[in-house]
Image 1 (cartoon, rainbow, N blue to C red):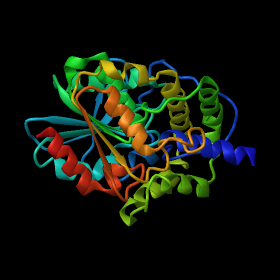
Image 2 (image 1 turned 90 degrees about the vertical axis):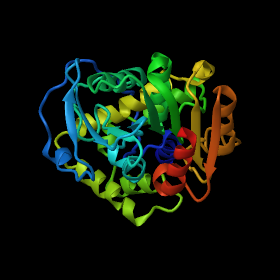
Image 3 (image 1 turned 30 degrees about the horizontal axis):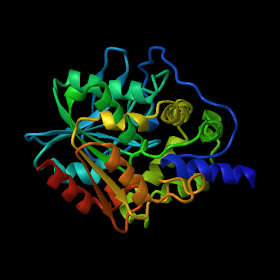
Amino acid sequence: MKRNFRQTIVLAGFGLLLCLHAQCQAPAATSAAPATTTDAVFENLNYKYPVKKLKLANGTTIAYTDQGKGPETLIFIHGLGSYLPAWDKNIGELSRNYRTIALDLPGYGKSSKENVQVGMAAYAQAVLALMDELKIKQAVLVGHSMGGQIAITAALQAPERVKKLVLAAPAGLETFTEPQKQLFKATVTPESVQKTPDEKAVANIKVNFYQMPADAQFMIDDRLKMAQSADFGNYSKAVAASVAAMVDEPVYDKLPQLQAPTLIVFGEQDALIPNKYLNPNLTTQAVANTGKEKIKNSQVVLLPQAGHFVQYEQADAFNKAVREFLN
């Protein structure tokens, strides 16, 4: 019973999309130069849009898609355990009027996985480095869940590079005590991710939705394929290190420093933020309002009949809110 309870606590913490099983060893990020080998399982995942790759100065290879043209460039940053196809329903619509770039973070999808730098600051630097390589001086950062915390971190690191922020069910607006942080890190380890039973992995994906749509089945199919990969161990390290980074590199106290106009979007039925077990008296509306109160020039949109994966489950409404915000 204790193991299942701890699993649920973490699951409700950061929207852990593709894994969970409980062990008790804290992960650590690594900083060695990544290997250049590619894994057939991850490489053969079916992405809707053409994938491009480039190598950053630190040797990390970043996979990304680049669609559309327009007066603004939108850079989509996925959440914990996820990958760039999480934005499929947003890229197609928004690329009609904007340049849309979605990337696989290091450790995820078709990007480098071995010995990559994992962390909120490191991931923010990867996004900014990608912008440098593509000669993009300024962009709108669109982040989901952990990707929202990364987007905030990038805006704090380089405010002149971030024109606006769109935060979809972002991590970073909810606070945790030190014992709670240690619980997160002790529960999600590389070993626990690797040992997640298939049925638990499926359940972990479904909980991200209010009512999981049929066209999201590919997320389950891909997660089960990933577990068969020789690179799944490196992916598992990235997931565990990402959890540690989210709690070890908080942004809550720095939110008033943000300069970029910000749109905060949550699904009204988000089951993962706030944490229903550690913060039982907190509501999604309250978390969203915290962001609005602390971030200057920000606005909040709550979408009905949507869970944590708000940008996918209510894509039309989400895309409309983004358009109105950018205009």
